[in-house]
Length: 194
Image 1: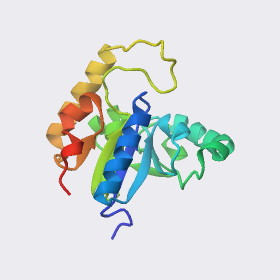
Image 2: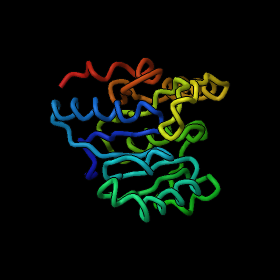
Image 3: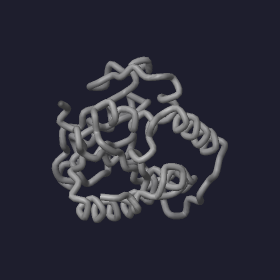
Image 4: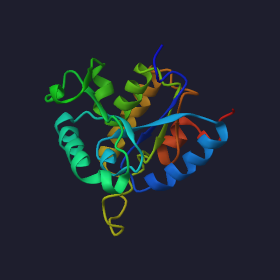
C-alpha cells in the first residue's frame, strides 16, 4: 500500500490568492481531520511555508534550479523543506533532472497543474485540493499588486485543456479547488461531506 493512501494532496500554484487559499484549506482540513501533504507546482515550491513533499512541473530545468535555490536560501525563513521529490513528464527535455519521471498522455503535460493532479493520483492520494490555481487571469504572488489581471489567449487555451482532461478523467468528488475558475469547474470544496 502507498504511504499516501487516504491522504490529501494540497497542490499549490503561484496565483496571488495562494495565501488566502491555504489559510481556508487549513481550517477545513483540521475540521475534517485530514492528513495532508504539500505538492508544489512550478514557482510555488520556492515560497510555500510548509514542507514540500512533492514538486511537479512540465518544465524540469526550472524545477531543478528552483529546488537548489530553496535548498540554499529558504530554510531559515520557511522552515523545514521536506523531501521535495520532483516529478516531471518522461518525454520532456530535461526530465533526467527530476527525481521521478512519469509516462503520461500528451494532453496531460500541456499544463503543470493538470500533470500534478495526475501524479498525485498515481501516488494514490485520496483527494487533491488546489490552492493558488484559479486560472482566472489574476497576477501571481511574485508580481506587484499593480499588475492588472489579464484574460489572455493563454488562459483560454489552459481552460480548454482542463475541460478536455476533466471529460477524460474521473476527478469528480476527488479534485477540488479553493478559488476562481477551477473552483467553479471542479465543484465547491467547502461543501465536501466528512
